[in-house]
Length: 324
Ligand code: UT7
Image 1 (tube, rainbow, N blue to C red):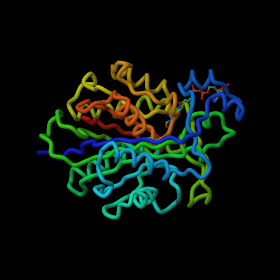
Image 2: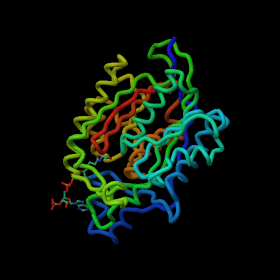
Image 3: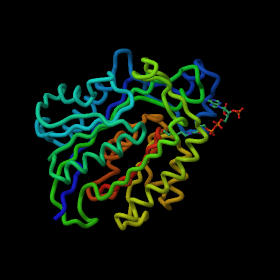
């Protein structure tokens, strides 16, 4: 008998304000053709004035609870992945906990930037498998629009805001790949690359929030290598072939990275969930957003094998295999 973290429900939320590539043309020297050709992005959602990361997370969480048809009080673990918390402290997870009226269990944030959701899911899976918690709410939520330098065309066209949430329940499995739930996770980081994708501020350095800075080409190069490595590792550990994967739900940073990784893995484009065209890069929110979109439009069904992967600042990267 093996404990498995089984997905009970998903939810997502996007701010109402939508910014197209044409809108960006009035802010920086760019054009729709360049953005679409280099990234695949056509539009992104931007949080309204006063709309915070916790607000997006709370809405996504409520939708996930409704999808799972469970009461919020049964949640005894909340892990929220974000690099754009409402405050330096307390954690955004505790704000979500309070808003949902949950008074038991534990709530904390995880900070692994674009890999944040894979890190949060892996952490929750280990809590559930070890018996430390029974039911987890795992959220990725971001307002990257608040840390963008809106005069820097090399970064401001890439990101968007949003939130996605997944509810995991500890259930007994047979210990085989036919079990429902998280089958395998794999995390990596390498701090030698911290200057390739970072924010130039923080409470202990500049005492300001700072702005995102990126060496795009370098990040791209490492992403293609690291993502293939982590996916290979997860498939190898689980003893699963890429051809057995029904849905590939990668971090949504750049359409070219997604296509290159899927091709390398031999996964047919029809089995790749792509939302980067309409959401942009929402960092830790991108995978749970894409999972929820594909679950609610009927693509991901119970029993399907889903592969997720991400890479972000640090560098951090990782992957997971989930039987829905
Ligand atoms: O989520 C975390 C992980 N992040 C990523 O995975 C992002 C990885 N990197 C990328 O997605 C790509 O490197 C970018 C989309 C950021 C850039 O694409 P690229 O094909 O690597 O372009 P580049 O940086 O080499 O820039 C090519 C040209 C440059 O002009 P010159 O120097 O060749 O004259 C840039 O100045 O494109 C120019 N450029 C732009 N032109 C119009 C850069 N940004 C823009 C822009 N509009 N927004």
